[in-house]
Image 1: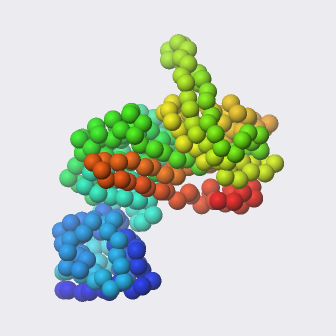
Image 2: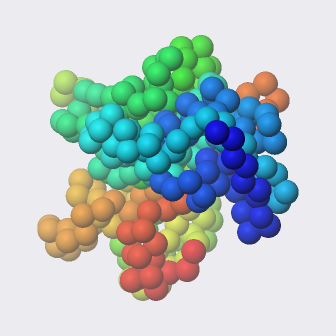
Image 3: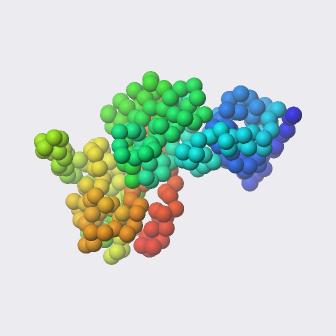
Length: 302
């Protein structure tokens, strides 16, 4: 069976995996990846990656594949614990041969060794996206924090990305909604000496973050943050020290009430930028619905 679907102007500049879903129905990302690799899905009779953008006039070629049947089989094939990637077309921002960039959900750890019952690395290791390899974690992102997160697909890329993080060659931008109005200049740098303990030993670390206030009122502040250093809980600690803790932060809390009604931490990893062999990469992660809703509740503009 061969079938062709032409790209209309309304779908111009859409990723091919999303175009496939818009015409063939929802299906797991792994199923689309597999059939792009084996040539059962082609764009203009050529194999392409899932991140390939389509344009008006392009033709999606479908070869010998019954999507309805495969999709039904896939419902029993996939583990229910894969809900983080199952049928979630907005989760994966970029997927190539060397790394994957996702929009991580809040409440899920990035790797094992925590009290969380599920973590990103374990979840992706069971998916078709890593059938011929395994996922490697190359940086941290708090369990409570949502947003852009990189997963390496092989050891060489993991070592390269880890070194880029260590050399501060990967630039991350966060968005946060904080309690109260910040009485500081609209942009500048936060410089602190943060304290942590290792086996009762007190350790003081210098921390620096560039910031820009995007909007504020007497109730809350919407701020953009670019960490220069990479200390544990750096942004949360610095905003706490400033007297304007992040809304929903149960650990670093400057509000009067000891009970925080909001269950979500209003901290989002919005953008990641880096360069590999003269190739420049920029990835943005759309803030979750609860984050955008909080902006409206606090009457803050994005």
